[in-house]
Image (cartoon, rainbow, N blue to C red; front, side):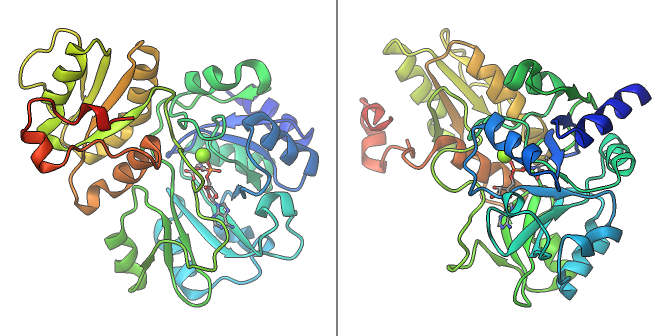
Length: 339
Ligand code: TXA
Ligand code: MG
């Protein structure tokens, strides 16, 4: 392990990329002060240069090198949730390279808790810019083997830290202009944030140029994915497979009846376990030769916020797939309304 860590640190210093585990998802890391290394991240991911990166630090102690101001809300959130699955967006320090920030005046920073990420950051002794280690728009990796699937040998060092504990990307909170705004839901929920800083607004301010994951489908499998109202999943899956579609279902319960031609994954009723397995399930379904994925809608309560967010992004802007009331009563179902 020490040899691998040393190799990772050397690779970072050389401007090469290193994939490493965090408790949310695997990151594709680059020396945050090395422009050529930063460019490699965008090239390898196929990510537009305008999409800023998160800088990872081993602790809050060097935050001042990256942020020129640490508002009280940020201090409180960092004290409560770092190290952990929280990213803070702060006013950037003036010397931060514009490739990190996408040319914006703000910077995203995170102190991850995964012991291997901690060891890497401490040994490297600087900031590591790391997006999720997947190609742009695709599903984030929650296992080392997912990173290999994405990038093969293009990543010089891949540290294997096992399954990601949470399985969804970090909660992103912007602390700018005195307030706190939730930009991306994650395993740290709104009420936890509010218990620390009081008011937390939801969504980007209208003058914020960059919304995480904006611009079409994100966190997406290649197979078309639709979100279907809870009660309609079985019927719709049966109707589609009777039509000759190879349907895969991601649900929170077993099927009501066995459908001969439907692959059915029961991901369970617990949001933490569902989130932990979600990306591995989507990858498995993508490989299963199904022609469409139906996902049973998840409950409308806060504990499912992060899962609901990723599912709706995976479905893309064009998909709703829930037949209207009167059509649902009809035998034909609203199959034609699916993409
Ligand atoms: O859990 C995570 O956050 C993982 C692990 C590796 O730390 N990283 C991750 O990075 O999900 P990425 O690049 O896949 O997503 C980071 C998101 C992007 O959607 C980006 O737009 C947003 O953070 N972001 C970065 N800097 C920002 C900024 N200055 N203002 C607003 N959003 C920002
Ligand atoms: Mg990502």
